[in-house]
Image 1 (cartoon, rainbow, N blue to C red):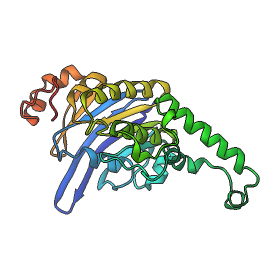
Image 2 (tube, rainbow, N blue to C red):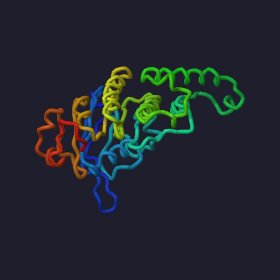
Image 3 (spheres, one colour):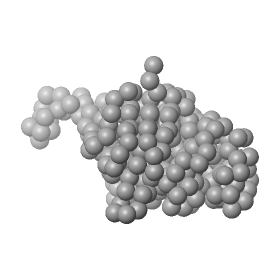
Image 4 (spheres, helix red, strand yellow):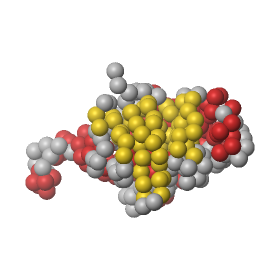
Length: 261
């Protein structure tokens, strides 16, 4: 049986710069895997290729055994890949609930005419989407924020809303790009619990980019390490902490502690 995600020799060039060079990553269904590396290592570039923002120069990306190279972002999303971003990209003038309903739009199942005149499937599907959105918010402890503007929420909760919006697309694979960025220690500790809960309750696979090594080492089952666009190590957290190539890449930054790399 093929892995959920199988990346082979993934490479992208921007002019004369090789940003990612022959990277191999394999993730089985249900895993929680970390992708780490110093700034500029190529982590987010990998995410951009996985989600169709960039097309690889060479190599393959297979989801459930099917090549998704060259598909548009909305096509990849429809196949079960969702992501968050380093910088929060909520629709801040909308409510929390409305942010999730945007993600559910592709599931609406009614025509433009039905929407304009409130006919046919419109009412039923709108209620179903609201029910689904509220259930996701409830599972993340955000249901009491549903009707507030997204911009009014504390930073940590805005991060959770962005994750909730990604979950609304019913992904098989959730890509989290530095979800702890800008969080204080208590928010990060709660985030660790939330990610583990999401993986279990939604029965999905998670690939996580993160600079907070305490978070990565605590929740990830396996870790891949990039440096200058190349994969320099992979393994379990305890193996990664002891790998001399990883220690060198992070300039001895204390991978097991609270420091950020």
